[in-house]
Amino acid sequence: MNRLVDLAARVRTLSLDGAPPQVRVALRAQALSSFGAAAAGRSFPGAAALLDLYGCGEEGAVAVLPGLRAPDLPTALQVAATLSSVWSWDDFLPCAQTAPAAQAAWIGGAALGADWDTIERAQLAANELGGRLAGFCLSSPHSLEGQTWLLAFSTALAGGILRDLPDLKLAHALALALARAPGSLREAVGTGARLLGAGPAVRLGWDCAALAERGLEGPLDLLEDGSEFIERFAGGKGLSGWLDGFGITWLTGTLAFKRSPGSAFLLPALAALEELRADVQDYGDQPLRPEQVLRIDVDVSLPTAAMELRLGRASDPAAEQDAIPCPAAFLHSVPRALALAVALGRSPRAQDLAPSALGRTWPTARDLARRVHVRHDWRLSLGAWARLDAGLGITRIMEAPGPAALVAAARKIRPPQGAAGSLDGVGAAGPLLGGTGLAWSELPMALAAERLGPLDEELRELPGELMEDPAAALGKGLDRLAGWASRRVDRFLGPAKDSGLSRIGQWLAEPRRSSLADAQLDGFQVPLPARIRVLLQGGRVWEAEVAVPDVASVATDLDGVAEFVRGKFLGAGAKRDLLELADLLLAADASVPVPSVSAGDWLDRLGQAGR
Image 1 (cartoon, rainbow, N blue to C red):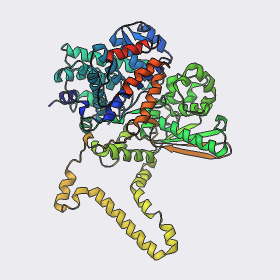
Image 2 (cartoon, rainbow, N blue to C red; image 1 turned 90 degrees about the horizontal axis):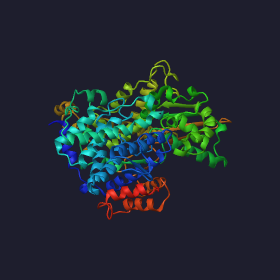
Image 3 (cartoon, rainbow, N blue to C red; image 1 turned 90 degrees about the vertical axis):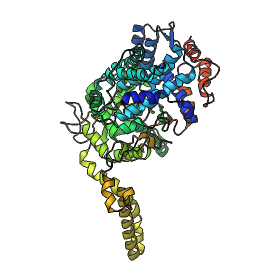
Image 4 (tube, rainbow, N blue to C red; image 1 turned 180 degrees about the vertical axis):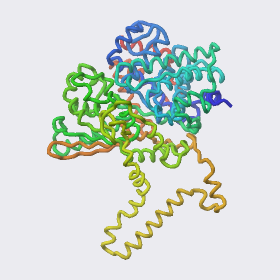
C-alpha cells in the first residue's frame, strides 16, 4: 500500500478514547501555551508592521489573541502561528515542534464550528503524525533545522481532520503540503526573517486541506523510497520505524514546555549557568558579576554543536562591532544567550530581548560573549545517545549498530563556507579552515570510555582493597574482569548465545529493527546535555552540567505544567476573564471534552478579553 495513503487512514481513526488522561491534559496545556507565546510575540520587532500589513486589530472576523482579531480565517492562522513561534517559546516533541499546527487546529476548528472532540483529535493528529514524520526524516543533516515543511504537513493534516476528509483526500492534502514543502536558510534564523517562517507554512497547509476537499490532488509517492522528498528532507533514507505505534505510543505525552524563550538546544547551557550562579552565591554570599568572568567554556552534544556550526558568522558576536543585534540572534546562539544571562543575573525573558532593553545590557554582554567558547564533547553525545536508546530504542529504529548512526549524522554536518574559529572545536564563530568543529580526534577515546565505563565501575574499589589484601584483591579483580567480559559477550550475542552455533549466523544476518511501538516514553525527556566552566578573576573555576532542558514536562509533572502554562497564558493580559478561560480548559475533567462552552465561544471570549 502507498505509505502516505496508509498513514492518512491510520491517523484519521486516531482517538483519545484509548489515550492516557495526561494526553488530553497535554493538548489543553499546549493550546494555552501557544496563545501565551503568541501574545508575547507581539513585542517582537517588526510584529507591528506585519499586523498592520494584514489588517489585524481590535476589529475583525476571527479572534487571534486578547484584543487582536484578523479579517479572515487564513490570516488569523498565519498571524497566530507567526506570533507564537517568533520568540522560539513553543513546546516541543522529541524531534519536532508542531505547536503552531496544533494551535491552527484550535482556531480553525472554532471557526468551522467543530466540537471539542474533533478539535482535540485534529490537534492530536498534528502532534502524533507530525512528530513521527520528523523522526522519519531524522537522517537528514537538516532534520532539526527550520521544519517549516513539517508545519505545512501537520496543518494540512489538522485541517483535513476538521473537514472530515476521507482517507484518499486526506492523503492528497498531505501530498500537496509536502510537494510545496517550504524551507528556511540558516541566515534567516537570527534576523527579522523569522516573522516569515511558521506563518506562511501554516497557511499553506490549511489551504492544501481546503483544496484537497475541492478535489485537487497531489503526488502520493513522496514518502516512497527514492522520491525527491526523501532525498532532500530525509537524507536519502526514511526511518520507517518512526511511523509505527499509533494508539500505543503517545508522543503528545512527551510534550515539553520551555520556561524561557530560545532554542531547546541552548536551554541546558542556561540551566547549567543558573546552577553555577547559585553555587557562586552560596560560596561567597556574592552574586556572579560580569566583570569577574574571564572566560566561559561550554561543552555540548551534537545537536547544539550543529546549531552553532550552521549559524556560522551569524553566531559570532565579534562580527557585530558595536551594533545591537536583532533579538532573534539570541534565540539560537549559546555565546550570546549565556553572556546576556550573566549580564542580567538570570536567564533572558522575551522582554529582555526588546531593542530598548538590549540597548542597556548588550554593551556589557557583548564583550563577555566574545569570551564564550563552545565545543562539541563526544562523551556528552554518546551519553545522550544512550538515553535515547533507553527511551526510544533509537539504535534499532535507525538500524545501525551502537552509536554508528550518531557518527554518520555527525559526518553530514558541514559548517558554512568562510566560517572562522577554532580548528577542532565549535568556536563562537564556527570552525577554522573547513575543520569539522566536532572534535573528531577525541572520538576514539570517547568510544573507549563508553565501552569501558562498566569495567571502570567494577574496578574502581580495587586500589583500597589491594592495600589491605593484595592476593584477595587480585583474585577479585580478575573475577570482575571476567564478569564484565561475559556481560559484553551476552550483550553482543543476545538471544543467539544459547541457540547453538548453527543459528548464530542466521541471527546476525536478520535485520534487528524496532519501531516507535516499542518505545518506553514514561517520563521521557529529550537529552541535550551541556557542561559549562567559568573562570573567574583570581583563578577559581566553577563548573556545572545539565542533561536535559529546563522545561515543564507532562511526562514528569502534570501539575507543574498546568501552573506554568496558566501563568504564561495570563501574561497575555492579567484579566479575570482570561483566568476563567484558562480554568475552563485546565480544570475540566481530563476524561471528557471541555464542558459548558463551545470552542467558537471560547475563542470569541478570548478576542474580547483585551478590550
